[in-house]
Image 1: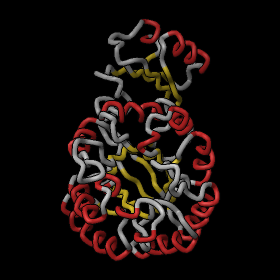
Image 2: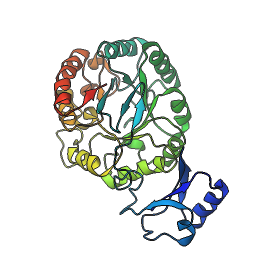
Image 3: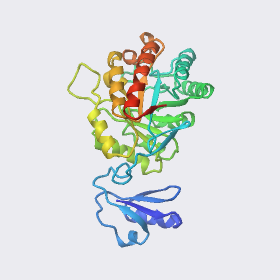
Image 4: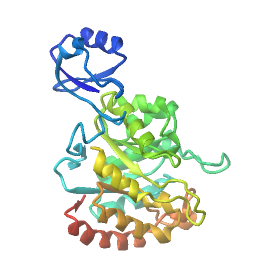
Length: 332
């Protein structure tokens, strides 16, 4: 259950009510929002006396549910918005990892050429093997920050674990929580306290319910700028890296109020299929695409097989525009 309480009520009283009724709460600009388990199907008199309005939900997908907020949440990225009544689809592109200043400058220059506003690259890499490139760490993060300022780009980078979440929050414009960190409550709770957009990637073994409930940790902590990212799930198929769940995307569009982006690169794991999957995502009218692009994928230090080169990305980008127009979207 979600209860809206007048913001002028003494905070100590809201805290007492939250403790007594095993609820969490946060304060927005207009009100306190108190959330109990969805198992509560009647409002106690004590809460009824302070409630401006209340909502009963079917599951613990509550703040993210369209039964609570019908319109997709509006999130500002740079000078643009996604969600709300906006018809924008953001393209976020760049290499899997920042490897050098030359590489990331070439990547930034490509995005400026195409009027794309968001650059992605990892400084901390949660690799499957301990014997592979683990990222440049804080030095890479600071270089991303510098390049973002120079080229006026929004920087999207991943937090690997709670030990460097503060550094990522400081330097990134948009924080990415990777699939392997979806359940990391240290990261989720830190990101709940910031007022920056957060891209939450679906764990490759997570159900849609589990995925969105992880987003609820951030929403219930007061960060209303949460974006869901479908990046492929593990199925019985062995010919592709993962399986892009566009059925799941359709569900999320219908039943949640969070913007949704699609990552075709991690889903298939091979560059040959990225363009087609990106076009499929665009045709669904998603709020964003996250695409890995490298100046020379052959020498990439991570995920070389799935990254597009710059000419391949230019060709893909050209085909995305008419699809966006056909479904009433505008690329930013």
